[in-house]
Length: 123
Image 1 (cartoon, rainbow, N blue to C red):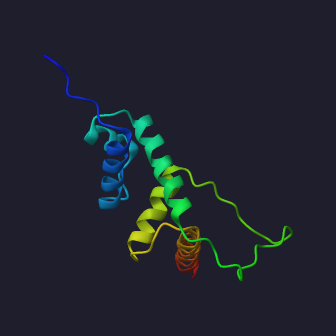
Image 2 (image 1 turned 90 degrees about the vertical axis):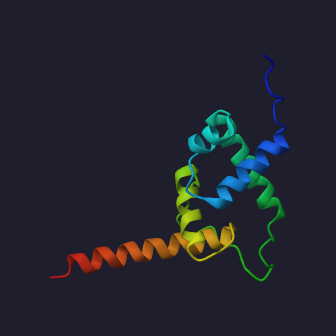
């Protein structure tokens, strides 16, 4: 019995993109199970999709200055769990996956968590 032909990278990445657009909370393992490939393959596909989307995303307007090197700032590495959490936050407001939207979602989540903790600790 012969095996079905392997899908091309483009077809597989298209399937991964469709699944993650339908449910941004899907893990690489669940996606892999649905399309019949390994989770590491899905992770590579997700990274390729992110790079492609980043390249196609509009660049910030030149009027937005970069923060000075001595500004206070918090730098977060967008690992897969954090990226998925940001996707959920953006999806709740139907916002695109851009740097600006990720920053806005993270800031809103931090403020909301701080407000919740403050309310719980008040006498």
